[in-house]
Length: 515
Image 1 (cartoon, rainbow, N blue to C red):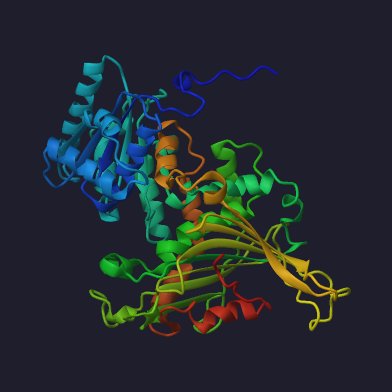
Image 2 (cartoon, rainbow, N blue to C red):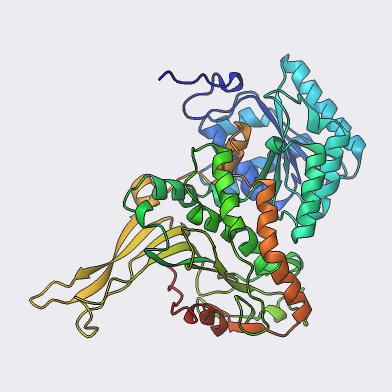
């Protein structure tokens, strides 16, 4: 069969996914995310020859910064935060096309000035370029940025052509279902869904991307990836840090909004979804939405039920005493914000009926780790039922997302010796060992995917609303309950005892997370 022709816009793109000529505008260019992640990602894409020579970077922010000062700052950001050292020859080519524009996000004239700046670049080149608008601002200014992109005409540049404007927007995608619907309404007023790239950096991590390959390119897994063989699924996103300087934001968010509703649900959807009919972005995203729609409403009780929330108390992290959440700077003494949340979910479809999915995330836990554990059913206790002689564990496949990317398979083996004894053993695969440690950062992959119009690893509008339909009732219930049902856990532990209850009720227990 003849290979289908490539889209005209993609003609000339090399097999290593080089990018077309692009103007990228970063709103919030003086912020922390731009310095730590976005600028280093752009540098590394340039270092790998994955950006067009005609790549232009425009920083937009409220803080007045001269062009030369902005260029100097970007070089410093790369030196401090990039996964590899600054290469002057590489960055100088991007710097030559880098500039900054100061303006207020609610001032449409500032956006019209931005449009004139973009027009001047195109006129100087003698060709049209696609524009990527990256909204890296606090969520309280999402609305004016989106509305002024529309009012100024920037959202509709080259509409109906492959050069149509694109918009990347950072989470949070709302605080609850109503605000998520409102944000999607504002987005739809200015952009087509095909122009919108809702970014969750977890989807850019190598092991998360590898989930599709692990499931659908290995026949040893997919036939047993269902209720007949899987006992339960555990997803852990744990941090050993406290709120630090983010208390103002975090106390308004909490663990459920900050991690569970977005990051962990992305992991769940990739683990649980049905095989897509193709690797196209829409086919994959269709299946993610389908499995989220199959999740049943959770049971809500002040004590018991399917959810647990807690705050960390003082304790020890790596041998150092740390304060409790209520003693942290800028945290109100009567705060009911949860720093730990655990949820038990039920997916009512043919593949997963009866298999509990356990999700947990929290701050000041025993160690920093993000992982997915697929625990398979135990073998029938016939040959190896003598527990004194035979230590037989449930087979468990663990996908480590961070900090050590890789996969571990727990299986049972005979202990060497004259007597038949068994012991669980682990088989390890590590990305750093096999492929080297200098793998691309998540933002590199995601920025490049947006530039070349691949939306596979981005979140669709209906997906955000489907996820919020699960979690908004929980947040409402907690708000109504106040302090009632709010547990406590010692910093440096794995969370409150109540989180263990979620699993004990189903005769399960949390995996000791880590390698």
